[in-house]
Length: 107
Image 1 (tube, rainbow, N blue to C red):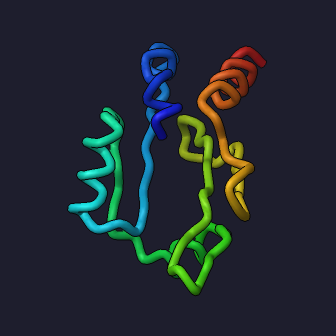
Image 2: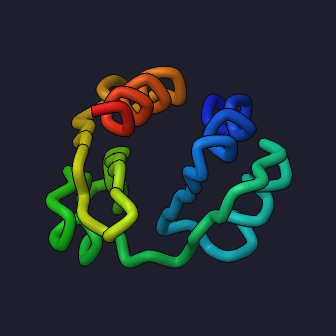
């Protein structure tokens, strides 16, 4: 998330909004947002098991944890790119996301 915040102006210039959501409590989500100085929306309180079933994300039942899942959604609301992580790698990066969005916009 800090990676995306570091490039937030570039996303803004392209009229791209960034947001994130988690199963964290409101208090924990606010703390994380403040600690990381995030300017974009941070959702909270998701039911990890229900969300993972709906979006196809990998769910760790032992830790009640959804592995990171990223989406690029076009202006009409259609998911055009999705990444599903099964561990610590395989996530969207700000640089790759910007490159891909610019490519798609210029097609």
